[in-house]
Image (cartoon, rainbow, N blue to C red; front, side):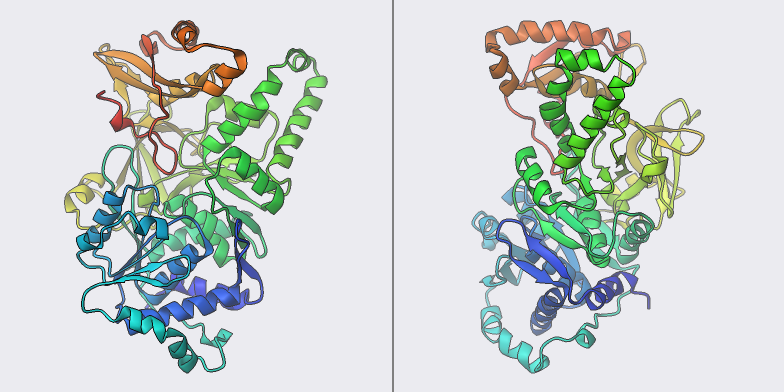
Length: 552
């Protein structure tokens, strides 16, 4: 029986026993790998006392904390299935997922518990706080709270001399069985339960080990949502397995908070979403670039090189100054921002993946990265573009490999739709592949606009240009009555700084629309900009939920 995924955790705890494993950035509470092992052993005893069986589901929702991570590891190493739920989900959605997954136990933050109704639970036997693992609720007929009172005594009877390295021996479980039931945060409707196996996760670990993204003693600042596949795999799982010291931000990662934490932690490698880099560029870099003296200097040979070196140095120092690479994923990186990062030789790469692929599909090491691409297929992936001319004509990206999920939980219809008859996974993304295998994303097949003249328009490419215009915070390009229009949420802070009044905004936006159209093909031209007064609602990976706005 093969159980490499669980074995990775077991070996890491033993090998890195005395090293620091996890720290809460705010409270400063820390755990060594030994202490993580002790907490896991304690939870395993609890699960056994409650007669939790292998492959039973245990749900987990809350902000990134060491306790969140310990619950995750304890669940999968017990042989149960973890159901990580994004903390931003509405209470109704959380309750639906808990019921749909048939979870037996629920671990959550106290704030989430306040908004849930235990009467709606169908299979939950007990609810626990992830702040201190106390029992918040037990179903009628259960004796969980009594078990909790005697848990310390039970632990002492099992481990009279404390938990030692030799006691860290986790269950054997077939890697082709489900280990994670991850509910997607898609932008086109209600989430689906993605069934990921231990072997799916092993592909991500195997790839990470070939890079310099992981290493014993690495310092990692984790701020991506761990209930999302990207953050879970690369900001947490692969780092723990390699012996890193993971600091959980435990706060909303605004640029100001994030940069302060980067300065203190000085991470060895940084995993982020493009939005963070774009905000830093727009708020810190762009104002400096737009100064007349800098603009003139960048046109002078040799002088511009020194200026770019200085920009690179400042940006690197702002992110802690000690990282090897910044890996961006989860959404496309703005073209203007990427052009600048490439120009100053900033150490970054952009990857591509989806929850259904555990998540990584393509990426490239820093030395071989090609700007505006998302890299090449990783070691376990076959990939092709469904197009008559894949190098020039965009088509849907199709993939196969060990990283691909075994299906959607209790949803055969959705599973059959996402796979072709010959077993390729339909990603729903459009792209082209150059002759060296580098993938270039053009947009989502579902968001592609087909004009009345038969031309394909990829709104993401237009939005990338729109978002760099003055007084534009974010935008959404959609089709209304056969015309292309843009919804724009203004940058009110920039307007205030420049003394721009709301009454002037429509005229300013229309002038910017005309200038933008000069950069676009005629069939891509925006006919109107509509001011949207609030930020667009987003998924945890910061993709706008388009379906909420397309029919307004």
